[in-house]
View 1: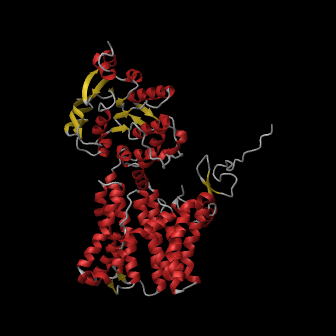
View 2: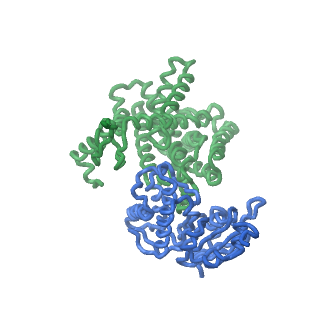
View 3: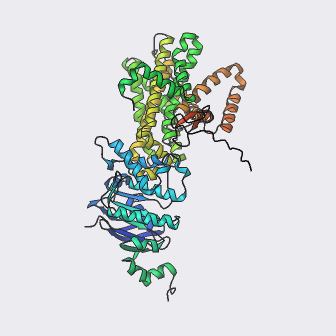
Length: 254
Length: 356
C-alpha cells in the first residue's frame, strides 16, 4: 500500500470542473512530479490533499488512514506538509518565529524538554535551507528566493513524511534552483540534518520548470483539464505526444 | 536564565534594576507608572482624582482585553461591550437574587462573559475580517433589546442600581481595582509573549498558512475569544459595582468603540499600548470637562493629530525614538548609548567624510 492514495477526487467550482476523478498514488520516499498546463487542476489537487478545500467526491488515504474529512492541522500532525506557490510568510514576525509556529506543533511530541527541542529544530530547518543568518530579521525583508526557502523550512520543521511543493523552483535563480534540487534529494534519502530528523521524505512536486523536475522525479503525473492525462517515468513523459499536445496545442509537434 | 532563588537576593535585584530596567526608557517608564499607581494615594486622596484613576484602570484592562483578541489575534471585535455589560448585569442579578457578595458575583459574571466569548467566537470560525466585526457588533444590540424586553428583571432603561460597594472606603476600592488591573494586565502581557501568543500573532498574519503547519486555529481563536471576554467581563463587573449601577449604557455602541479608540491610539498588538492609550485619553477627556462644548472636538483633534504623526500608536511611536535595536543582536538600547549594551557593536554609524 502506498504512503498516500487519492481515489477518484472530483472538485467543481461553480460551472468549472476543476478536477474529475483523479487518482494519485505516492510510495514511501518517492518523488512524484505533478505537471500540466495552467489551470489543469494541480493546485486544486494540492488543496484537496491538504484539506483546504473538501472534495465533492473521492477519498484520500494517508498511511492507511482515511483523511478525507480531517481538518488541515490533523493531516499535518499525521505527517503531511505543503508549501504555497506564492509564499505566505507571517510578514511582521521574525523569520525564526515563522518556523517556530511549525516546530511547536504536535509532531514534535510533548515529552520532557520539548520546547527546547522544537526551538533547536526550527533553527536547523533554517540552516537546512540556508537562511539561518536572517533568523532575527522580520520576514518582510526577505527576497523572493529567501521567502520560498522560508516556506520550505516551515514545512520541514513539522518533520513531514510527505511534502507537497507547489512550484518550488519558480522565481529562483539557476544557482538557487540547483541548490534546492540537491537539498530535496538529500531530504528524500533521509537522515539527520542537525537536530532535524527525516526518515526519508516522499514528495509531490508541482512544477513548470520541467528540465529541473525531470532530473529528480521518479515518476511524473500529467494533469490536463482536471483529469490525469498521462503517467510514467520522466523519460516516457518527455516523449509522450499527448503531453506535448496538451502543452503546445494540436499539431505543434508534427 | 536566572534561578528562582536569585530573584530574592537584593544585590541581584539591584543589578537587574540597573542593567535591565533603568537601561531602557520604556521599562523605566513602566516601572514609574506602576510606582505612581501604587503610591498615588500617599500624595493625594482627593476623591475626584481617585475616582478618575480607578475608572481609568478599569477601562485600561478593558482595552487590553480588546487588544488580545483584536490586536493580536486579528479578530476585530466591535461589540466588546457585550462582555463588559453582560458581566455587569450578571453580577448585579446574582447579587440581588442570591444575596452573594461582589467577591463571588464579579468572577461569576466574568465566567459567564467567557462563555459568551466562546459563543461569539463560533461565527469567527467561518467569518473573516469585516464580516466577523459586523457579527460581533450585533451582540450588544441584541442584549440591549432583551434588557428592554424584561424591565422587571433587568431594570429596563434605568438599569439595576444600588449594587454593593467593592470596598469599605475609597482607598480600599482604589487599591482593589488597581491591584486587579496590574495583575490582569501582567497576565495578558505574559500570555501575549508566550508560545500561545505567538500562535495568536501568527493567526492574525495568515490563518491558512498557520493551519498548513499544523496549528489548530479553531482552538486558538476560541481561546483568544474566551480569555479576552473573561477580562472584559472582569472589568465590566468591577465597573458596575464601582458605579453601583449596571445600566444599558454599559452595552452601548459607544462603549464598544471606546476600547478600539484607546487601543489604536496607544498602539495595537502590544497590550501595554492600550493601557497607555487609556491612561492618556481617559483623564484627558475628564480634564476637558472645563470646556464642555469643545470637549469632543478637542478629543477628536488630539486623536487625529496623533494618528497623523504616530500612526503605529503613541507608545511605539515614542519608543522608536527613545530606543534603538542593535543591528547585530537585536537587543534594545537606549538612544543615548553609542554601543550596544549586549554585544558592543557601535550603534550610530555616522557617515564619515571621505577625503579625495
